[in-house]
Image 1: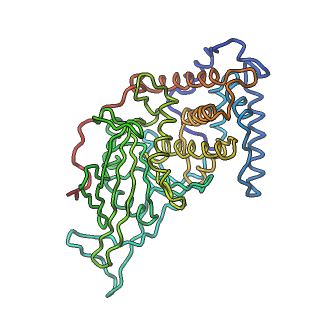
Image 2 (image 1 turned 60 degrees about the horizontal axis):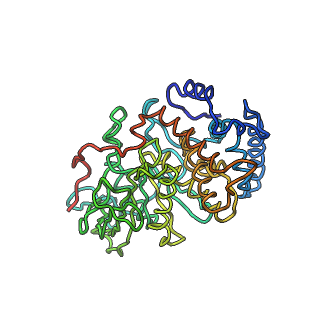
Image 3 (image 1 turned 30 degrees about the vertical axis):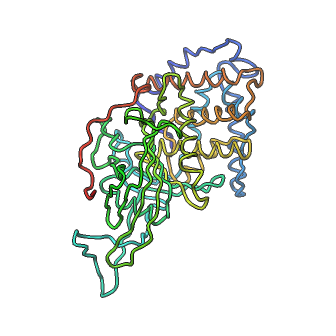
Amino acid sequence: MNRQRLPPHYQQQQQLQNNHVQFPNPNQAKGGFHENSNRLIRCVKDREKTLRKKLDSKKLTSIADLKVDRWFLTRFSIGTPYTGLQEEFASLETGVSQWTQASRVNSYITTPLGINAYRQLKVVRILSPNHTIKIEEENRLVYHEFQINAQKIGPLFGREYIASEGPTTSSVYDFWTLVWQEDIGRVLSVNFPYEERLYPSVYDQAKETIQYWPIVAGETMIFKPFHITCIESTMKVAPFVEAVTPREMVYRVTRLRLFYQNPVFPDQPTRDVLHFCYYRWPDGRLPIPWSNSDRYSEAGLSLFDAVNFELIVTMPPEQSLLVHCHAGLGRTGVFIAVDVAIRQLEQMQTVGIARIVEKVRETRARSVMNPWQYTYINLLVAEKALQLGILPPNIGGYSSRVLIDRVWQEINDELNRQFSPAQMVALPTLPKQQEDGPSGSK
């Protein structure tokens, strides 16, 4: 079984944590679960995995989904819940790897090798500024087969996604071709342009996400043969609260008009694309609260509420939601998994997070890249279940709020070990952006 590569010294740090576990109430480590091991939870999860495989072979979709109370108690009321979720994460199928890595120290994706990686895109590549095109014979055009690091996921509970890496200087043309070919009307970016410069030890200019869409009304960016014009762009803190300065901004919503212009083909009707860029989710961490009174749980749930309000409510059901971060694996995988899990919770009142992550990985291998991301998914679903009243305030002799807060504290401690505490509570400052991306704006 392929195991997820963990950060340096991770095992030593985790062992230290396990030796100093504290509970809000000493009696909460008991209640039918062994205080010093997670044997019962492992038995339950092994049984769930056996059922998943058995029912998967019969092409049943509602496999090993648990009622909310059982899922919650078997994950959150055990002696060491974060350790239990780590074990569950390690047991998941990683999916057949469709990507290669540049090196052990650089986890950025480099080469697409799998399903949907090769796309025959029915557009003509413009080869020079004077609109010369490559012609094999008279009146016969040669179409290029582009490689785009993106896969379709789903449909899962009524929604289809496309998970993609962030557009770079070399892939931005193919990215907009993908948007056109798949008739994408909604794009969600959970990273922001040039954020890779915040991590100089792994920074590679050729792999950074660029500013690939205009944000000034009337501005047009040209990535031949596509012209992308900004109709309007708004900085926001929440759906009904606009930001005054970029520093206050939590996300930006931009309405774009996409025009396909090719000198040898008739002009195509323009298309509108709604773009949502979230600026407060640093790579490898959690969405950052934007108020001193906010919690990480509130920041996470607010992100999904904002995306639903700004993008989803008006999205035609037949369209796919395109989601990207930098590599299109970590934050992208977390967003898709949480979105699917919340939809399942609302529609079925059941939870099947392990199954959802494995389903996503069947197409987009290695999505959800580390244990704290997986734990974060479980926490947000628990918060949503409590918010909706599907999870009662008290269950099995425990306070649901106390159990959830205990895991939030464990994941916060883990992230503070992996990153500087200051990086967890403040929006990073990006160095001055240089105009070194693809030219063509006017």
